[in-house]
Image 1 (cartoon, rainbow, N blue to C red):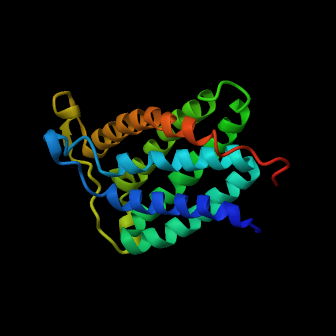
Image 2 (cartoon, one colour; image 1 turned 60 degrees about the horizontal axis):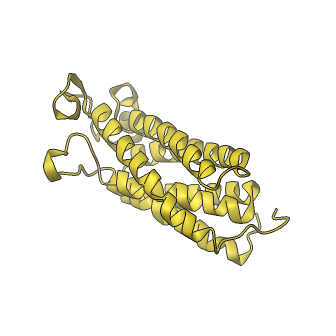
Length: 208
């Protein structure tokens, strides 16, 4: 798989974002009483969609998929070292599905208004990533992975009030919904740097 030197910064950025997010998602955001509805990973992961969309705009969907795949393999290897195997499996599967879907959606919408493709692809990708990651990483139904992997990291299946005040839901559901809200808000905010950077990152003709 050949990469021009100009593509490697995008690949490196993708790997850094995902590895950081895999590690940070294990730590609740304890400020302002939000420890049961938010993790630190929600603040870093939306940057992966920014990197993906900029790669897609610059080099096209084929190279964007290559960057996703290389970033995936690097991230999984490093995540095994920084986090648990179950977290690495959950992150890898969620990352692949969400980012490859982001590539396809962005490519279909890229000819419209400049904000439409990154916004819609990020919204859909964030929803898929959050649902898949948190269910595989923390739901009780996937606890067999802990036994299979020789680790007991906990399922986070015990009940807490939704957003600290609603009906009871498993903790991982509360964390997933909190993370999704933050990811979507940051996704909207990422339109600002995206709109600025695309004035410099122009499409490469006939990229393959």
